[in-house]
Image: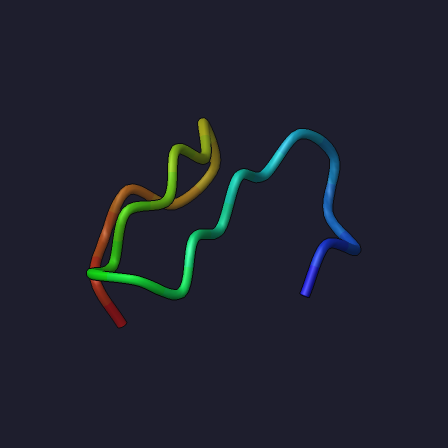
Length: 25
């Protein structure tokens, strides 16, 4: 789901780099 400004959400092992919410939800 890439609908946010600059959000690399990788559905592999919770490896997302987002400068907005750096928490594993």
